[in-house]
Image 1 (cartoon, helix red, strand yellow):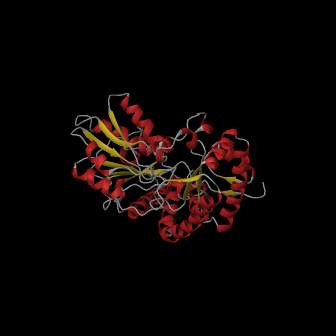
Image 2: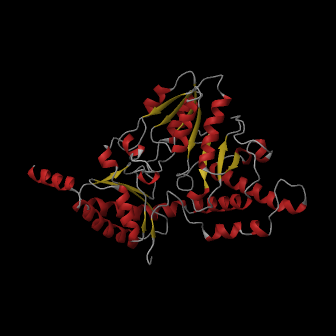
Image 3: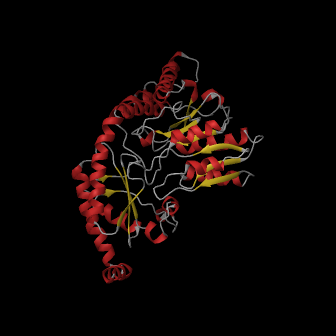
Length: 395
């Protein structure tokens, strides 16, 4: 394949060269176990400690409030399962939304099977929750509100500060899945009244298989993984030193370049959105037009199957993703698109394109040019589209 345009940065990102360089010594030179007592291991321990300090400083937290995990899904599980266990005597009611990542939704389903009750808040057509509906959902037995910072499919950014204020006012813990937001949006945990936060390194040009969990010191949750005294006896398992070092370096670079990178990506993203909506008939932008991640563009094309669209884009060297879950063996469209009110037949024709700071205007022009041809070709094979066009003309 001669040309490759990677527009699936919400799925994963390339490791930055500086990040890889920071990690390299801890594979073959300073490979000691940071929990060992001899001098050789102290280089690893120091590196982990410095990484913890660095990440804490980026979100306005204390170093001992940062726990290293295997990624966002583990951190989400830790927040929900251990909060449920720790506060079961107070109540068994949890509030979340219908558009959360499956790491939250499937964990909530697990808890429901074990006697917990979950309220799944609706969202509007842009993917935003209603703050009044959130407040009304709080009960005396509510122990946790878990609402994502920004949606991984449609890019909508939730009113996190207001959610935190409501939770704080009612004495309910607030967890946010910030996997898509960390490194892309400014986050200060005290200002936003966040008690727990999940993040994953590979979403901001760090390595895969490592993340962090912020837990405010006043929140006393037990361990999700047992077996050793690592992470202050709260998360057993030998520390992934290269991953932790790489994540901290990636986090520092992401936050330092956030404003400049977001400005650039918004310009390219808005050009992409404008061309698609102007030049492809019956295309729809999903998610809030302004309150969205700088790199996210999510569309639906009527009378198109998302999986066919992805395959034909791949043949042109373009990597994107679909809101349809077809590729995971399910015929159901995205739960997020259904939650914002799209009918099945439209939700099936979705395409998510997520940029990086390396994406150029020329890249997205090529993508749109290819997309126009592909959509036209797929629709030409659809008798339903032909009938639809005729009906539109008749009107």
